[in-house]
Image (cartoon, rainbow over all chains, first blue to last red; front, side):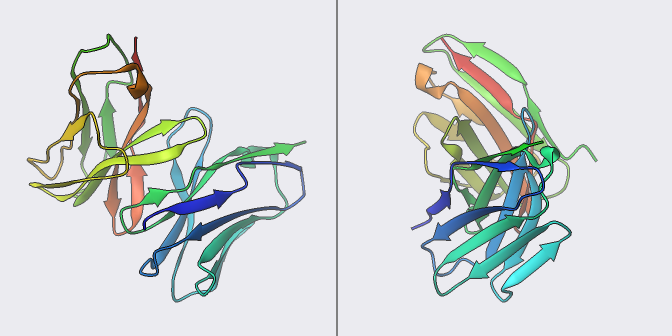
Length: 108
Length: 110
């Protein structure tokens, strides 16, 4: 179906550590995998995305990896900072169904 | 460019009342959608539209109606509000696959 499962639901890390959030999907036709960040009281905004013909994409401290065989993709944040604290959502592009979100807290 | 504009920002309704949440975009996007956001439940798709005159149901369509008479506007109607519809509602429009969200409407049904 269209579902995408996201784990973990909450994640706490120390400033400077890395954070990894994983999503699995079931629709083999999915070809676009975005990640959104939602700060408290604000709207979600796209932070990085990957297309199915690419295995990894980086943008400074964030990266996304895709394993099409296993049908999962992950968000990696390195050298975390307190301003990375937010809810992160994965999605897959059929009708933009979202995962349930991961509340990331970065402690100074 | 205003992007995606949602009104109102806040609304309190009594059970059984009806109302319309407005959504307008000025980016000429064909695809528009409505989500509700509840704690621990993420963003759940209510209805979506791939162009003027075309709408379809998402994950949680019951109790909601939509129409798309123009490319710019995609209103969401609550037919008879229920406390279970207390939520934050987001409208979004998409260019290709990237979604642009409105500011959200916090709706409380008492």
